[in-house]
Image (cartoon, rainbow over all chains, first blue to last red; front, top):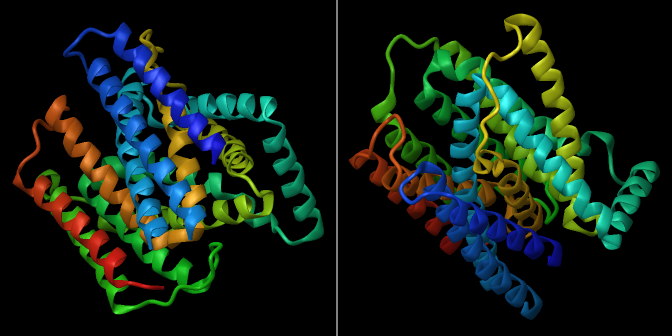
Length: 56
Length: 308
């Protein structure tokens, strides 16, 4: 699970870099922003899943 | 129950990522003028990233050694390592049939194969987590999802399609269900997620090299060029995350629910991206919203009512 969370961090970092490098309004900027959002949500969901899996 | 809901949510988020990956790889394919070449480039990027992660993670390497040991002992069978080839079959079928069938028929056929295959694979108990019987709720969830996807893409139906060719994406959809199950078995044998993702990437890349070679012999090498902007190469990293989530959650939620949640995520993500940055098809219409709503309802009903 730690590896999966590490991967989510990598995706967040890569998409964050894409966001900083891109110009607002371009497809690259929109995709980077979308991927950053998905990465952040994935991190939260994975943490919740690890927590609930341990409890059950 | 909470772990099951969190697992379904994780698969849904993986589907959102899948939508982003499709958009990135689609744009890359546009530059290269070749869908298989774009998929091969994306898969190769994924393989390099996962190989690097394996090289620096001792527990992942130990997991890979354990999987090889289980393979020699016979507790892990050779065909269970072929999950990546199933993904490559999907890419190849897209290249062969999507143009002739139209994207709408292609998508519905894949989803029909994936959900029907998910029911069958769960019934056969191929995925870790044991057999899951075909209940009315599960069958209805699968049928509603296929109908929802058909509604979502109905605006893009094109006339004069050769429907006999739809067998190919249907088979590719079944293969995607099998991929989810066998990757879960490799994860179980290795005791870790990353070795299963690595084997998936190795087999998938090898199968795509073969598909690219055959396509190049028939049609010649792609005449496009590599794009300069780095975001075109994000597809591989997103794909690894997407595969890893599926590998991690399949034993908890089964292949059918994994497929339904991923499809719901992909449709929702595609809708969001079409709203934020409309593609060649333009902004989404009412059928797009209806399709997403129905798919989410199907997932909700299966999660809430099914206890298998």
